[in-house]
Length: 471
Ligand code: MN
Ligand code: MN
Picture 1: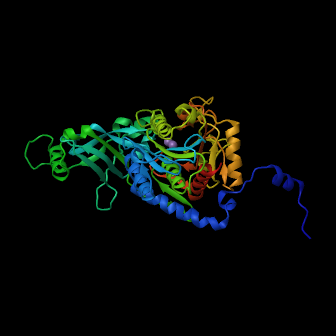
Picture 2 (picture 1 turned 180 degrees about the vertical axis):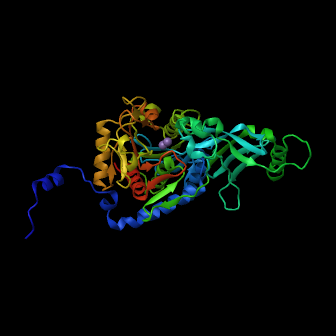
Picture 3 (picture 1 turned 180 degrees about the horizontal axis):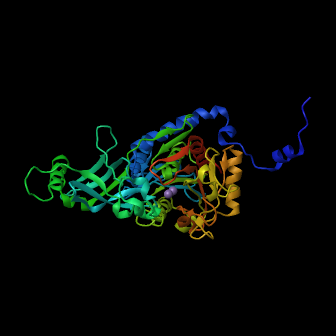
């Protein structure tokens, strides 16, 4: 005869949230999909490492599935369309049965990531070396970026206006670039007692570029001139061309599995390429049009506050919606459509690091492997600069994810007074739409090798897809 359950057990089952991980909650038959989805994601990470490369990658993938450029296509029910902006934003659309008049669902993720941009005049010669000046982009811990191999990506426009796409350091036979840190034998106590932000400063993030001189006695800047000769012979560029360029140093490491059991992935820029990949995949997976229109939109400049012509604070989203309204003869204005929209701000959040428990509220923290995180709000301190979802919209998401059996969790990025962060949510919230942050938790976020659980990524994908598809 079965033993009778204790009251504590009965109450836990009836009233408390589950404490099982996403691996346990997901049917075992789905585990193979978790791993195959992760392999496709790693492939994407290897091939596209800048916002420009990602826009191209997504466009190519979408075109293969029949997506058409918005300008020339008929904007009618079921149409699969894409719009780009300055090569740094792309929006994928599946037009609903009633255009945007029956609603608009948007998933917004960002495709920019932490990196070191080359300055307009990158090169200087000192101590027999040519060094490259950089200007870091986004919230990095500068000491993460020294003594690690970096690849150079970007575009250069030559003096004739010819465009050159650059990618150096991804293949084994190509060189990489390294920012050397001071050896431990030098600097003494004064250096050892510096604070974290003083050890490596922004100006000291200079990478080694060359050391071979011109063989000419008494000439000045011999290494620099030899480098210019090389760059001109190989790429046809001159010094001034670096002014009309966008060049980024990014970690040259390849995405790899982390740990013994193959459950985790280490890579550059899980923030926010994990959500961007899941966003794109959920969009391309849609079968037939819903009543509402679905949009996967990919933003730039999130890491520096969503500013500029390609950030979430720009009018790109409005411009897209305005064009849909006009081409579908919508009865609503652009702002009405956006006010009625339901939006997921698809961005990663922090995961508990067991070495630093003291910085997290253990009842309100996200755990690696416990599913996609649904966060009610962002901001720092007393919720400053944040965005907060309504209880109504949280109820909508929670009900949907539970119905679809999608393992999810919730948390805050840190203890109340000990951190915080923002996403694109607050820039879209201004329309009066429903918007909430949903994405997987990441360990070592904003470092050159961030760590993500394969099951959390898969749960994000499942969640995004359910959001697009549900009534
Ligand atoms: Mn992010
Ligand atoms: Mn970030």
